[in-house]
Image 1 (cartoon, helix red, strand yellow):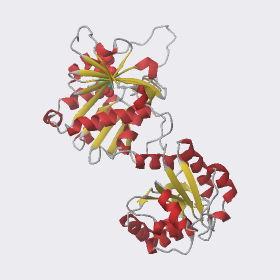
Image 2 (cartoon, protein in one colour):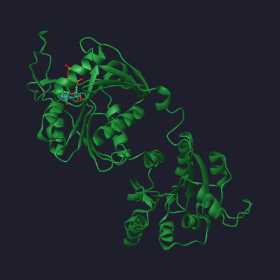
Image 3 (cartoon, protein in one colour):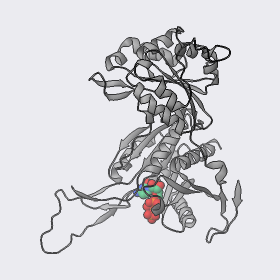
Image 4 (cartoon, helix red, strand yellow):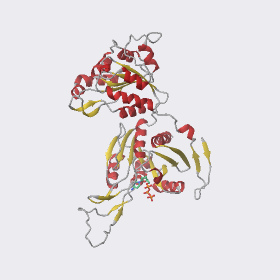
Length: 431
Ligand code: CTP
């Protein structure tokens, strides 16, 4: 780590640390050095597994595909071999391995086994410990403490809701498998409901999350994100350029780190990170109310939102019309409550039960502005960034400021920075 001491007027005692970029920004994906055994069982969702295979590889994983006979009715091993760049194994009698034991070799090589799609029948087979075909056999033969089993069920909604399936799912979890859940929506059979396999991108997010360290396990993290919208009349309002991407990345990173996460989001068109509870709000007042309702349960609050400082004193009930006179309307503004400062002054924050982190979107003089803002808001940690340089983008650079020092997190993807920030928060919680 490179430590650079600099003097900044009027904060000449500040220490500016710069994290060494090479150690922080992985050149390759989130699954670098991971070997995934991707198991396919019989279900129409097999077509999505081709995309999942591509996504896993794009994130740096090597993928060994194993298919049941039923899976080969839905997608060919040729497709999966071409995508994974490895021969697909479909039989326990496959004699290519010198020891003729694919059920032992394949499981032991893997960092994780992901069964996607996992049919109702295959779930029942796992529960019973059946072993009369390769995939169930290698799941049974896997070293249970070192080779995790992740399950992506896929089936018709009635099959999913059936007590037998639900009983089997509960048993699978008890046996140590990680059930990734199901999606809701239109099914191939024409019915609508729960039971669809999760989308490939959702499954990838779950697999990536699984491998992340869990320093926030047991913490409850509340995050605000995005802009707010302050209505002038029913069709107009005041907002800002915040995209919400940084806050959503922080919510995702906190969940990956094992926290229970609630995300209070202003009006943005972003997908909710997997496993995160999302509350959509419009105005700063809505955001304040949503945050206050949940703050009692939180142990960490990260205020990423670009909350409007002012709102029109009175939103017009009807659209404000031009009256032809050329006169412009006069708007009166009132200041919005500072959500972060309110929480930072709460008894829980003062007693150390709630750790508050603020953001500062500045256009210049980042260090001085961030330090002044940290002191003004009364938070132990404030994250500065240059707003115009990052609004709407997928990357950013951050400056972490506390009472004694400032640390630069060099330019990287917002998700990567969010993971670094989460690690820093976890470190401070342990002190
Ligand atoms: N914040 C908040 N509620 C507000 C205004 C800001 O919770 N009503 C939070 C933001 O989420 C951020 C921090 O306060 O974590 C700083 O926000 P920013 O807009 O950068 O600063 P302001 O307090 O608005 O100060 P200024 O506009 O003067 O820079």
